[in-house]
Length: 101
Image (tube, rainbow, N blue to C red; front, top):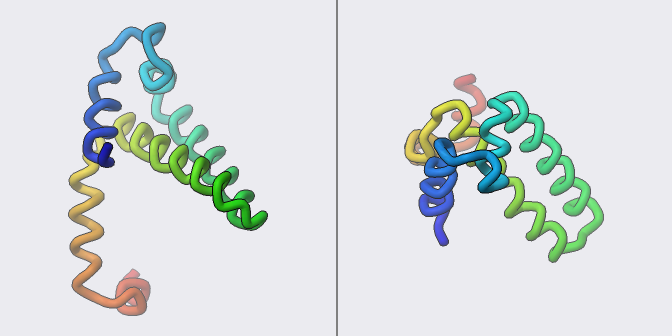
């Protein structure tokens, strides 16, 4: 499964009955709840990275990616727009990018 496939599934859940899936339940609670859940998952990933548990970090990283996509969908930000931004950033070094902010 690619991120594009996962994002398409998440988008399909936006109109689903919240009793039918976790994603639909999360989206029904609104963008703020989606953002909060993303933050919680990011913290869990950080903890596993610090502990050095690769398997746990892999699992938490998958949760982070999923919840990031849910948060984007909740705010109607397309995955493609994020990928386009990453492509745009490849045209300059990270140091140049940071200096331009």
